[in-house]
Length: 376
Image (tube, rainbow, N blue to C red; front, top):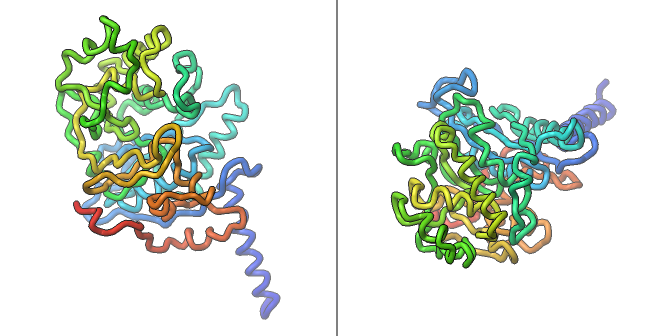
């Protein structure tokens, strides 16, 4: 068939193909947001040979949680990590998702999540691991914000149990991060024999405020807990961590964290979600990483989520920790200045589908920040 009729038919086929793609990405019932396919990124010169499997020593292992509510953030995070990686094909993503309760809605959501990730990143090396809420449900205490009480926030405690034993270490990242540098640089962080976790530390922060007066006044707790650490305890954010999984298992660190969660149930020694138990176990024992790898707090505080600027210094990874998430503020028409930087990695396709073609075609994306900020 030729002429106008042929052109119309071919156009119809193209439209149908796009509709099918979006249906795969969002699920037949539209349970998830729709996402465009990201540009393809390939290894540069000097990268390791193609990995044979998850146990290949040349891989960089990234662990993140994955759920419908934060999927838009996860997609942008993955996109940014691939875009800035010198060896993107050497990154393996380990996603922790809520496990199915007898094959119900959670199981269906997990499959939709898998299909959405695969549709936007066809060449991505990844696996999804089921995390059962009952593993931590009895240990979670009320927090300053309901979102911090979600069982999946505690899945990072179980990384060493869920990931294959052959994986020696993993970078754990929250879903509200954006990379501006090659993540392999973070992966190659040296962990001395005495360290299990490496992360940026913030020793200027008021460490005492992460625990209640009852904790500091208890003669069995308080300063005594941190008395014999390698260094004075400092705050660190658990949304960006390099974890030695073998040392974690050998030292039973999940059980150590959960013991503090049990004490919290008895004495109410902190107010803020999953962070304080990590501080109780690791503060003063963390191997410090340059602050450029966690420019955190961009989501504001945990109550109001107001706008915050970047800290002084270079930027390798931005982190919208706090209540305000960039996708929510953009959708509400009240974005913060840095939210426009996040938007350049947003693969979300609005209801009218208008953004699909431009994102899928893979334009050169640029940060809405002065070049002087990235001064590495």
